[in-house]
Image 1 (cartoon, rainbow, N blue to C red):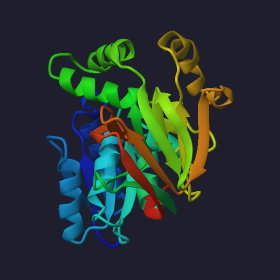
Image 2: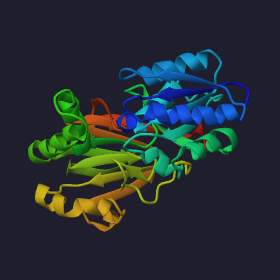
Image 3: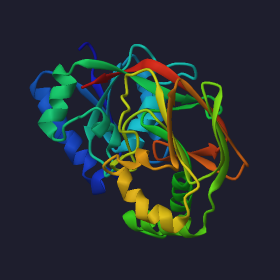
Image 4: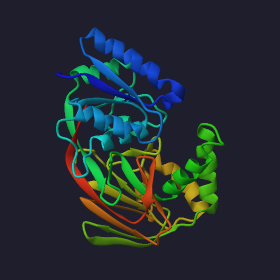
Length: 299
């Protein structure tokens, strides 16, 4: 390793424990002769801008210290608008509540495990999803429908409801008040669905939403995206079926459609929003493309 490892730290992650975890990882790295630089985020978007600045300064190894939102920002900081910078490498230091990326790459938690990944980890090239209209990439998933509605509601509630309470209130509100979304979905140019749906998920990894195995057959290096449509479920029906996503046994349901491909096009009536790795995006109508094996990850 020729340059210092840059730690992008979300101080709010893990109920405020992320900085402490990174300090311990730093000590272990220093003990092994590895230099570090620390950047602490203060507001949304800082992770991307700090990563980009460090990349421009010549650093190439980045540790995302936090949850999936931190990973998402670091990966977007490595994205130059058309591709992921080929010099860069990503390591993850799990320190957040939802750690689906760590699950997807089977990254062990703990200070020593994180330091070992950075010092001696093997590089694995993983796919990345690109939403050109957003100018953003995603590493775990992109969704439109109920999940994005929850994220939008939570964003409005987070200042008045502490911690996970805002998510619970947002989820309950969306479940009661949000209608199923009219959508048309094409995968590799072929129409696979037209009608109303609870959710359309374009998955790169198996897990999303804090441990739901939404795409049980997905791999992050297989060169395809897994497109899942949760169809026209009524709310009571959905409440009795949604638990099946956690163990990944939902694909057998007749209202669940699963198709794989290198691109997906989603058309909505303009009311939906996008959710990229848990971060709110723009209008739910979009094109999604795959950037195969675009990101080097230390595993």
